[in-house]
Amino acid sequence: MRTVAAAFVLASSLTLGLAACGKGDGPAPGASPAGESGPRDAVIDAWKKGGLTPSPMTAATVTVGKDCQSGTVGAVDVLLCVFPSAAEAKVAEDAGLGWVGDATGASQAYGSVLVAVADRRKSDPSGRTINQLMKLAPR
Image 1: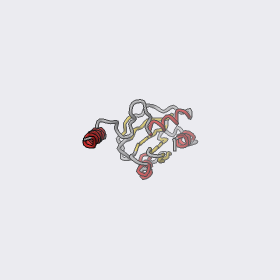
Image 2 (image 1 turned 135 degrees about the horizontal axis):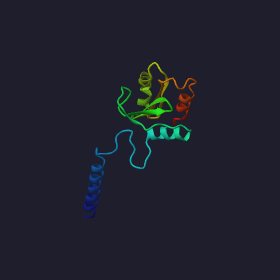
Image 3 (image 1 turned 30 degrees about the vertical axis):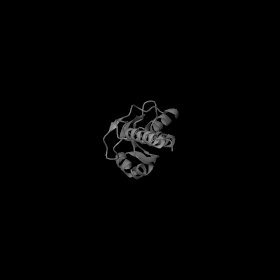
Image 4 (image 1 turned 120 degrees about the vertical axis):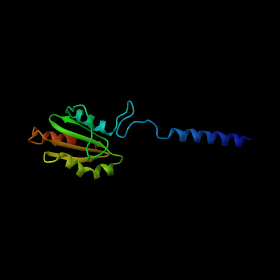
């Protein structure tokens, strides 16, 4: 009788555990659960700690990726796209350069985040801000 009761408890626990693993209304890819920092937030936080002032990031519909946000740092345009894996972010570097276009800029994967920057307003002639943005991004 004891093994039947133990088996019932185990089966009930597994059923509840599997139900909790279903696809619910969890955070979107790249988003962070309340109180936690995601990969995009880590990049923005690193920029802030380095003395830069990023604008608020807004959702961006671009061909680079599905989970992208854009904004500015100074007058330099920035695009941060979160991918499911570091390998997918690395593959997207060329698409990031496509987003940069003819402007001076860069596109590089940092873990699962693709960071693309573009100086479309020619406000960073020495490239100092672009260099700082890319160096400060966490690896």
